[in-house]
Each structure stands twice: as structure tokens, then as C-alpha cells.
Length: 88
Image (cartoon, rainbow, N blue to C red; front, side, top):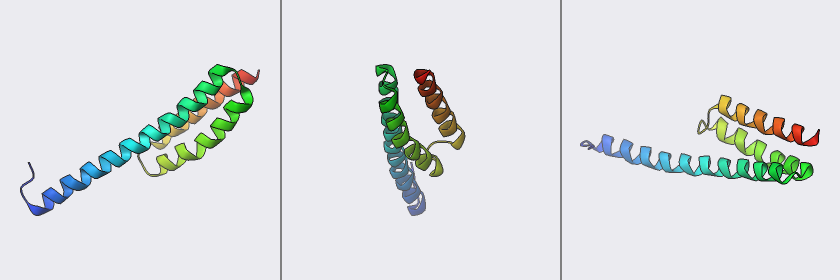
């Protein structure tokens, strides 16, 4: 338990940051699920459209260090690979 005023403030800030980052991670997962749903539906056009909307969101969250840059790149690469396989 935080005893000093400074420690209480840091604990409060950490909790607010944790909740905000959890919300952002959830948003990224939602965009990824939309792309996957379009891929599973077999619609290449819709999958590309969903991927184009998800890509800047993933990048923005990675820039804020909520998601690591390498994980963001890996997610985008794997989604793009699945979309290309759908077109073939």
C-alpha cells in the first residue's frame, strides 16, 4: 500500500494508464477480428477494406507503446498474408 503522497499519486496514475491501455488493446483486437471475419467470409474486397482501416489503428497504438512495434508488424504481416492467400 502506498504511504506517501507521491506514492499514492503514482499508484493512481498507474491504474489510469492501465485502464486506458486495456481499452486501446481491446480496440485493436476488435479491428483485427473484423479483418479475420471478412477473410473467413471469403470476401477479398471487404477483407482489404477492413485491413486498410485496421492498419493505421494498429500503427497508432504501437507508436504509443501500448502494443510493441514488432507485434504490430507481425499482426499486419499475418493478416496481409491471409488476404493475399484469399485472392489466389
